[in-house]
Amino acid sequence: MLAAGALFITAASASAQKQIDPQVLHDTVMEADAKHNLEVANQYFKLKKAYVGSLKRCEEIIAAYPGYTRLDEVLYVAGMSSYYLAQGKGKQKPVLKTDEEKKKYDPAKLREDAVMYLNQLIENYPQSPFLADAKKTIQEIEPAK
Image (cartoon, rainbow, N blue to C red; front, side, top):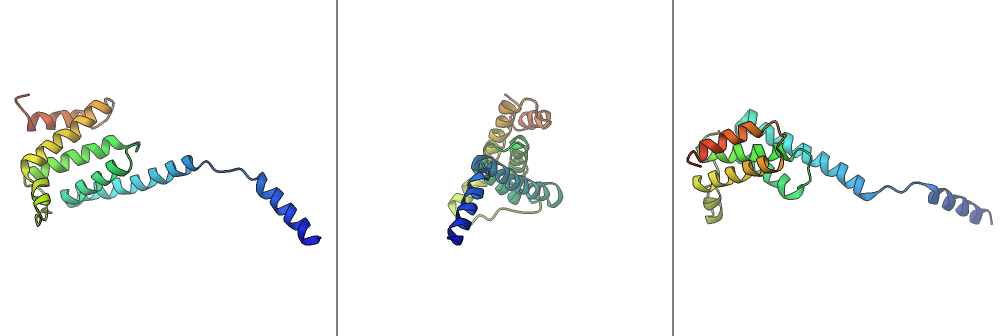
């Protein structure tokens, strides 16, 4: 009887606890993970001039966290990394073992990707601090348009 009473008291206190909304928890975890990936991408981009690594990190963020609050910065870094790779800049060269890798890192494809990322930034984030630089870079890539 004593054990049954203890079980009843424990069950009552457990049911009184507030349930955590899984969506809120997920968003916090998602933001933290995306923030970490962006920090790594920025380190590759700014400090190491490792544009392949930076681009890969950005592509992961775009694919996994499309609702990330700093997606404008992700698009900017992805666009600029693509642009610099198309110009042959950076300390890290892409590995071109497969046909898929050769196609992905072809300079014309990289310029196309750079324009795509930067246009997404311009269209979706008109208040972004990266807006002016994105427009300028697109003009460098496509001066006739």
